[in-house]
Amino acid sequence: MKNKPAFSLARALLQHFGRDSRGSIAITFALLTIPCLLAVGAAVDYSQANRVKATLDSYADTSVWPPSTSAPCRRTSTTPRATR
Image (cartoon, rainbow, N blue to C red; front, side, top):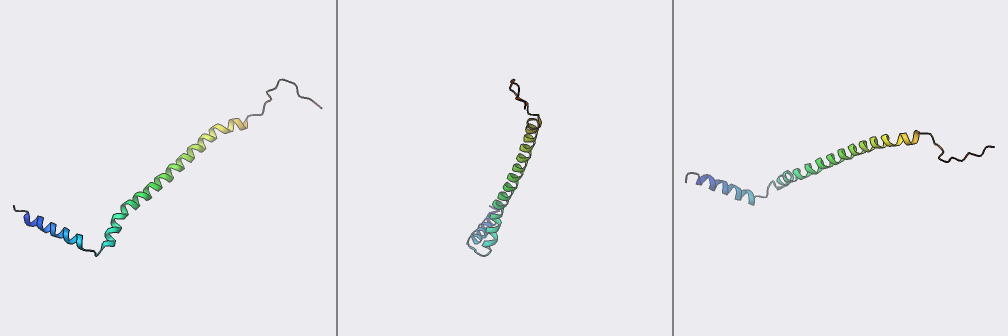
């Protein structure tokens, strides 16, 4: 097999990489960067969704409340009011 030296070289490099402890902070940082960025992205998406929901709630409240509060108060009773 022609590629046997390449496989044995790659295997030796991986074993050496596994035993070496220098630079472990950089590797740990690189591996933890991905979940941290995902968490930040989720927080940004969640805050944007809350802002959109608040805006839509505001529009819904605006469309419902003004007609009921701006309408004049009408008496529903048919009995005449006492006059002084």
